[in-house]
Image 1 (spheres, helix red, strand yellow):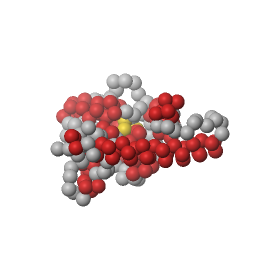
Image 2 (cartoon, helix red, strand yellow; image 1 turned 45 degrees about the vertical axis):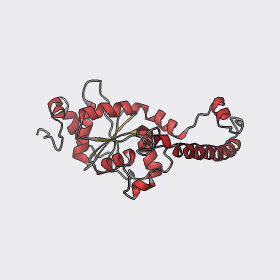
Image 3 (cartoon, one colour; image 1 turned 120 degrees about the vertical axis):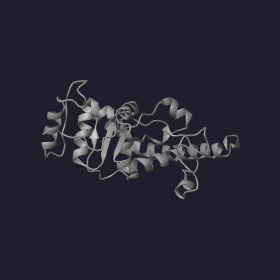
Length: 227
């Protein structure tokens, strides 16, 4: 039986669906495993296969790419999808020289419906969409902190061969001597003494918080950028 297309608005996707992809999609749909992996050569159309399988397996496609460039590439294939990236990728509506990650007010007014916010508005569009394109780092942050994307029924993870590096990068921290001097942080402790790093982290967080608050306050007072 041929797999029909459901809810794919992109004619380009329909045209690219080939007979060689259908048996792979059917085999994936037969599996009752919690995790299904697809290893295939470049050019087979893994993105389209996985999107089709996801559409048949859950009401929402959460397609997760390893980086932002792949998100943009996937959006070209599926223009009906909604892309969401980290706050730093969206310009602040109140202060155009800032991004949404460094704005002073964290858009409290937006939550009350008084002002638009490029980041929060895009996030609302994503949460309302049945085809979402995220990147791995953002999804990890959401699942561990913000929580609005917890408990998803199905997630497609692209470029699974780099997941271990992405996970390590998410939980690790790199600090250079130049950063220590720039932010006046305490001297770096000995590498093998865990307790000293815990103490260093606590002291450094307090210093960085003060520095961040001062920077945001200065930016907010710069009336040259206020429309």
